[in-house]
Image 1 (cartoon, rainbow, N blue to C red):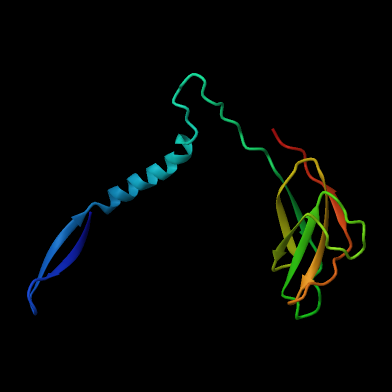
Image 2: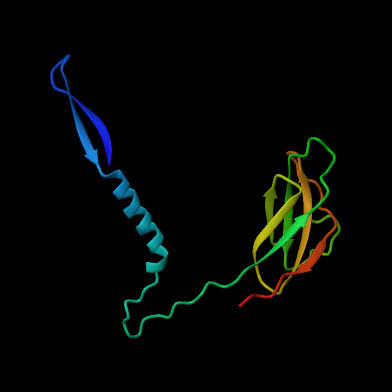
Length: 144
């Protein structure tokens, strides 16, 4: 139990102080339990016949990249460009997706499993450089 002090001003120069007891610990425990239970409660069909089956979210793949930093001190970040098709043009940054990273490494998430992806990197110092040489990888198959 916590003791809080509440002051009420009745007349100028007069203050009444009373102690208020609020069960903060109990409130915190109940809130914590409810938050822990929420994922378990969502998606419940209530046992009704004809209710929709619960379908698991598709498994996604990741790819991690590391490269040598550009020695130019004006470079403040990099763009990682990636996609399932190559633009087949040296220095091109024309890919399906890109992401901004502040260091010379990145983990690209939410990729399709067992799929070929092409990657390239450009440096950024207020202007974006041409893209690096392309690398490709096949993401891991979906785990069951």
